[in-house]
Amino acid sequence: MGKNSALLIVDVQEFLIDHAYEGQALIERIANVVSKARHQQVPVLFIQHCEPEGEFQIGTPTWQIHHAVRPLENEPVIHKFACDSFFNTTLSEELASKEINHLIIAGLQSEYCIDSTCRRAVSFGYDVTLVGDCHSTFDNSVLKAAQIIAHHNAILSGFRTLHNNITVNNASALFT
Image 1: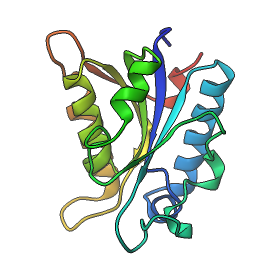
Image 2: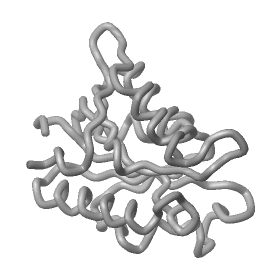
Image 3: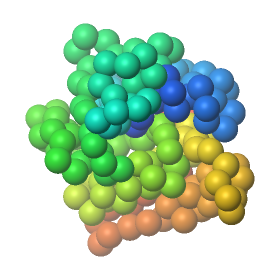
Image 4: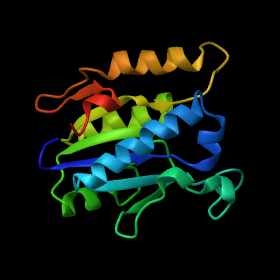
């Protein structure tokens, strides 16, 4: 990975992992990516979805970042209240303070927070690597989760502005 990369872990929270498509395999892959990033001293930042009540109410057990990837003391945890991890958060400031220009993104949900965050990052001038086998979602009334994941890997791959773009790589291709 480039010298100005950071790993962004989006909404890898107890409730979502417990209910996501192939959640156990997903958290194992994400934990491996987090471990490799830490080993190579790539900054790791966490995004945590929050809502006024329900599974994502601040402080509830289901709101917690999944125990397999708990942030270290020096790793920022940024709370968000929308799908876009940049919207009304300190993410831009955190990235600027670390001089980051490339984001490696993993987490949940593919069609909501992952899609929104990837696209917004590119529009803000970041190159993005979406970890294609480290994001997930749930079945909906039209598509199975596996179809949603594959669809987002396909449509986000190559999304670009004049100077920045999204590439999709599986976890095994990262931090080699």
